[in-house]
Image (tube, rainbow, N blue to C red; front, side, top):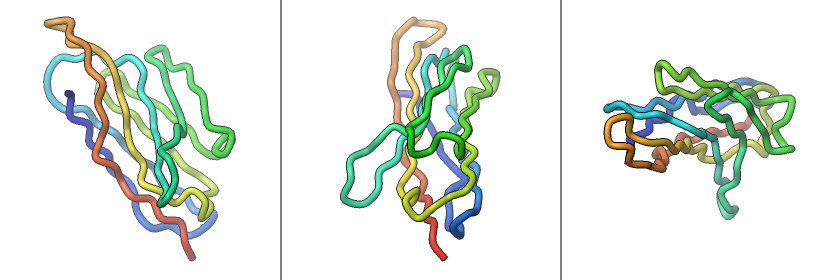
Length: 121
């Protein structure tokens, strides 16, 4: 497991914006696919946005045009810019990443601890 730490969640009014960050700490790892997921109370965890190492992306239909995922491979970091937020975006947002150790070649798949996003007036 490679530790992933999310930050940037909080309370925002409808129509507002937030930027989430996901940072991987420690070691020499190569990150392949990275993604943001979310889980609202009483619902299953769902994919929000996915970004490959080459920067190609895909999004859930519900966030297309409002959310933008990006990554900085040099920093082992991923970001999610969320605009025009609605109450339906309220959820715990999780960072996910998979890759391998540059030293041992051992693969990993990790989840962050989650960050709460609440959209409410």
